[in-house]
Image (tube, rainbow, N blue to C red):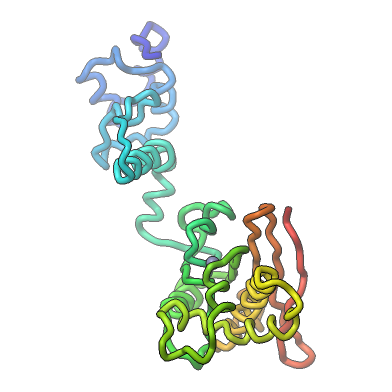
Length: 290
Ligand SMILES: [Zn+2]
């Protein structure tokens, strides 16, 4: 509830430096009866934030928690509402952080996820803006260096050699349509294949290994197995890139694979370990988060 400024509140405001706080000055010009006691205290404690809000030209009423939001039933209207809600509830309360991110990024993690709409890595793993450099493709595949440039390995190169991320996560998931396409694709039809089919054939080794090991299982069960085998292949393909391999061996970069099961909301995780004895690498430290 908005309060007119009483005696104590006026003293609180007057104790705040109007010269250091342009927002207060503006409020005095426009009338203080709309001003809330809690806001006066917040502005007093966070003069820098308030100045930044004003420098960006944000209207004073934008921060009002009870500010009316226009209702809209179309999807773009909903997007607009979500964006404005993000701005009011996330961006502006942490404006120093977002203004720093406007200048530079320094993520600690590179994530390679599937394009599937249900498995947004930032949503599932709770990454905040600036924390995870992310690229998503159909079936979260990483191709080996000898296959040439892709969007995924170009993003990897930038993340590793310029941003100096310390962790790479390949994140796969259950019921992956890309892996289902890989498993159902008839190899001899390659020249008539769709773009998706040709792309997912990059996971052919995982498919063949799965079929060999689990031909007695149903197609769906084979897909679940192939989803995990494909993550392991992508993890191993990462170290075909010399600028990743060298950093992993020096302990500067860690590589992780993880498998998000949408059905029971569990996450299986493992990592790539350097095998010092034979100059190789192996999968280790399997964990299940549930
Ligand atoms: Zn997928």
